[in-house]
Length: 66
Image (cartoon, rainbow, N blue to C red; front, side, top):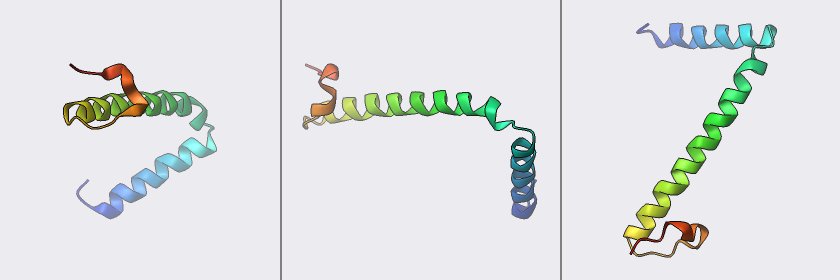
């Protein structure tokens, strides 16, 4: 597991297996929901950071801090 060639080959082999057996249909909804969750959390964190720095954050007025 310390060789980058082995790790790359393992990743490619897993992706080939998923592609051949339509495994992507199982993984895709999980990826989609994780992607949306990450986007929402990033928006919250950046909005709070901008509010604390007293900068304009017109895209997320919901998080106004006093």
